Image 1 (cartoon, each protein chain N blue to C red):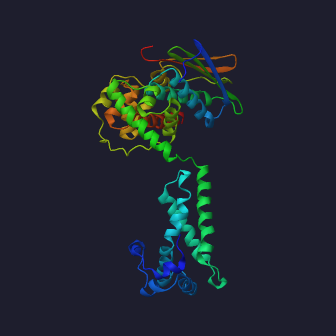
Image 2: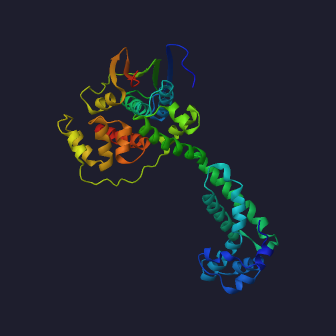
Amino acid sequence: MAELATDEDLVVLTVPADGAYLSVLRTATAGLAARLHFTLDEIEDLRIAVDEACAMLLAGAPAGTELTCRFEVTQGTLTIAVSVPNTGQRLPGTETFAWMVLTALAGTVSSSVSDGYATIWLTKQRDGA
Amino acid sequence: MTRPTAAARRPRPTLATIPRPAPAYAEQAPTAELLHRLGRLPHGDGHWSALRAEIVRRHLSLVRALAWRFRDRGEDLDDLVQVGTLGLLHAIDRFDPGRGAEFTTYATPTIVGELKRHLRDRAGTVRVPRRLQERHAAVSRASVHLYQRLGRSPTVHELAVETGTTDEQVLEALESAQAHTTVPLDTTDPGESHDTADALDGVEYRAALRPLLDRLPPRDKRILVLRFFAHRTQSEIAAELGISQVQVSRLLTRTLTTLRAALAE
């Protein structure tokens, strides 16, 4: 596999805010994580994390809107920002089981609800990177 | 391909494979004669069934030959033979011996039609081609070897080198595995294992979660607890439970989906 051309690559995918499109995002996640030489454990964890994050967001996304997934690929780190238009929903708090799962899978997790968008950030660092 | 006239004169050694022994007279008679007799017997009658089975038996090599033509479509040959046999049965039931056509001439397009329809219907459902299944099996085996050798989970590139494929092919195999991996039946002792109990001890978690966890199958619960409460890696859990890491991933995904739905109630 070719080494990355630059220090930081950006991949943005926009899909309908519908669970049926999650497999596209999972596939992209696995492909990008593999490029960064993540291990199988890390790849599978990330795949599940993206699933969880999207499920949280889709629960409150209005029908007919779009889900945007932004992948930032840097040396040894993959940052994934998933966002949907927000109409006042609240994301699960950091004390919830869902959040605990997300943290265990992705490493660093944060979220924000602002400017009409709900966003969850997942940052996974390659082991030893 | 079997010509009915030749088949009629030659006794076959595969008689044991038919469900019901054909009457002795049927062994000798030409297929055309049998089809005539079949047409006069009441459907479902014992003689009718035996005669029909004999006609099927005489055309199994035709079915196999036709099924063989579709062997590259990712379907098991035995399954294709079964589907083709169904086509053969339709042909036998619809054949009109009075028209004077050769039975094989009539049956061949019916069998091929049944095979094609089956493959077309299959195309709609996701089916993993054998080639991909084999690749996945190889990747799965390699991941276990590498985990033992390296003491950590391997990267996609390491798996590609180990299996003599490309990174993309490994990813493709993993992808297909996510959707189609079958997981062996849960044979875990229903009693809570020590590591599960220990991991849950001293962990503060929402009261709503405990009853949901208790409703999970023992193995699913154990995997979930080991991963999220004991912070073990998927590979470690796989090694401990004697299943593959991809299977762990799939079970985790399934369990989380179940819990998500239950917590949302």
